[in-house]
Image 1 (tube, one colour):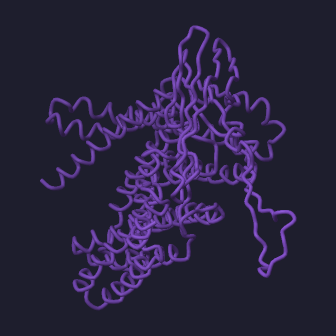
Image 2: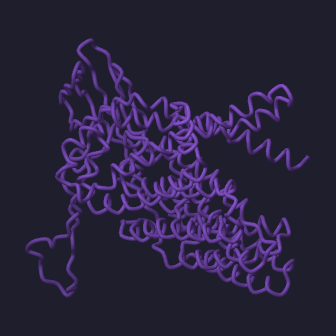
Image 3: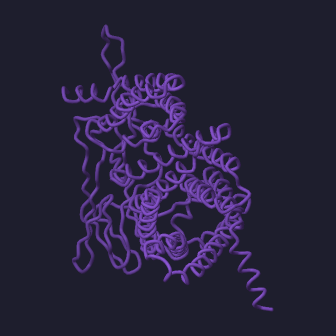
Length: 284
Length: 253
């Protein structure tokens, strides 16, 4: 009896038609969610730097009218994961007995879609780990500032800004910022944009504060002497210390990152080999 | 500066190459309706002009930056032109219809804001052009697939499946590359933002298309309508970003 019930749910949850319904449901929920996120950015932006369960506990009950789609999305994606696993398992179970009857290349070609599906599950698992176990903490950066977080204590020694050459259109814009820091043991860390540092199991990255930057102002000079040229002469003032206002250090702990990267890399390799073999098969 | 003036002429700061491209694409489209092979020989110079225009955008900031080359409103029409060229080379009888897209999207480029979006430090990385390169090729494949899907509703022997498969492959690569860029730039591989969520929606939509081959009651006609719906989602999503980015300050335009 239990085995019959198990088989019933196994076949139900592994049905290819369910795959289609779940995929389309996920599409609708992501599209719906994207509109809510667009018009409630400050609320949902918190999800990017907070554990998912912490955000839900803090925000969901008070914003259920805006966030109603989230539990549905989680359920749909969970069912999709189960469906993917069952479909792939059933296919592998059907293929493995035939391994001896076919050339290795042909067998691997048939097996590749199942491997791709399992790797997709690995990527989803990595994202789940990130969403539920990751941490992101920001500190404003300035020279001589001290960053203290958990067992991290860093002194900011120098902030060096590199600019594009002044004689081109990109001139005077920041091309890179290098931040030199030192811990109590004398170890130095160099963090810059696009080049993060690893320290005590954390990733250290630079980021900018997300708020509008005052635009250069145009003013009339005072006490301008009368002359025959009545056109006013404007001066452009740049806000002082514009660059220092926005720089932040982002301290990240993301245990799911390497799971995701591994999944992505392997899925691309397997997909590439699959489509090459498909091309060779068509050619032959 | 003299060097900058020469670069501007090469890059056609007055966008003459783009205007000529649109005219030539339109001419090829008209000629295609009467003489397919003759049209192909005009398509090649049209594409080369288009390529020169798009490649020249790299110097609009006064120095070489790859980011402006792959900016969607300009690069995606180039991808469509490339697909038309490829299909013409393969003597596909329906390749000319892709040029309807090339003319429309290139015309949008003419109307679009000129100049480049000056990249912030976290966007001065090869992951950025790699992401937009693969994403725009994917979008072009989806659009071309939609054109062929529309034709297949009237002509039985026109197949659109390969466009969508290649589009899905490139889009998957874009998601991987984009995730690496996102982490390096902002500390997450996926962000709860409109952009990322629409990307996920599009990826899942075409993943659903791939699984339609296992559905007995999904014939070619139903798949064509499915494909058209996907193209509408991609179009609405990507062009809403293009219009939003019209408001961003630009240089070199």
